[in-house]
Image (cartoon, rainbow, N blue to C red; front, side, top):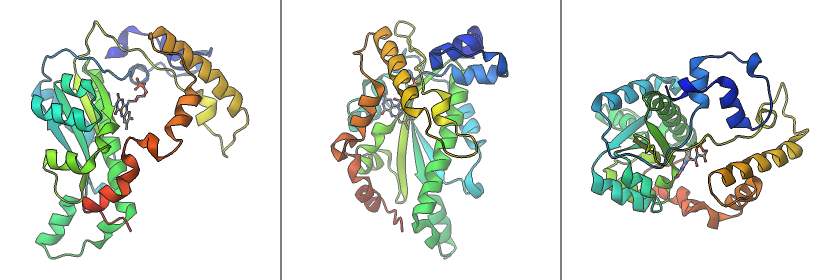
Length: 276
Ligand SMILES: Cc1cc2nc3c(=O)[nH]c(=O)nc-3n(C[C@H](O)[C@H](O)[C@H](O)COP(=O)(O)O)c2cc1C
């Protein structure tokens, strides 16, 4: 596992940039592994073995799935030209071109639609936002299980939300049937040791963990501290320093900050989702 070399205290310091005695935490290999996650955007060209892909899908299918509906699928793309086209559709992201394997994680209501059609059975329940959401949740849980497994194999991953910039074109490129949409992609490959990724700090636990009832006391001050930690991270990475809160607010300022995804509702109609 990536995390074997790092102590829990070192991982905590990297993740939170704040003092805390990790003595109170279970020093589990699994926790160390998960805390060592970092998105990888620079890869060596070596292929990902088929057995590793099989393992990733087994990990993905072992995740919980709402009512065992299993309304997700994944398309594994190795073809360099197809990856190139997907890279452009996702906003010109070079790492999609570079990573030897690209996984497109799908919310897939088409399987149940086909099953219903084959038996002349009603499937009206597929036409509700609820069922679409079930597919998104299922695909996400499956993908994250796969990600944790792939990272345990020493591979690097980065999720690609840019796959939602042009949902209809992505669906055509991947030959998706109606009621099937790529919710995000995932680059997979061997991290380039010359361009290592670092652990990115996260918000203090006090901001995201609420006990018994939602509580915003101390939130502003904690976010201010996090802005400082994130700025330090940016500087260490040779990136332009900026306050996290400024960047995040810019990202939600209006439809123009959504990279074309402001028309997702319309795209879902085209892709055959009713979403009542
Ligand atoms: C659903 C999802 C979509 C993402 N989309 C992209 C993307 O299109 N391009 C990219 O470079 N990173 C993408 N990321 C990676 C995030 O930017 C990254 O996880 C975040 O900055 C935290 O960094 P870390 O993963 O290194 O801890 C995505 C992450 C998630 C969970």
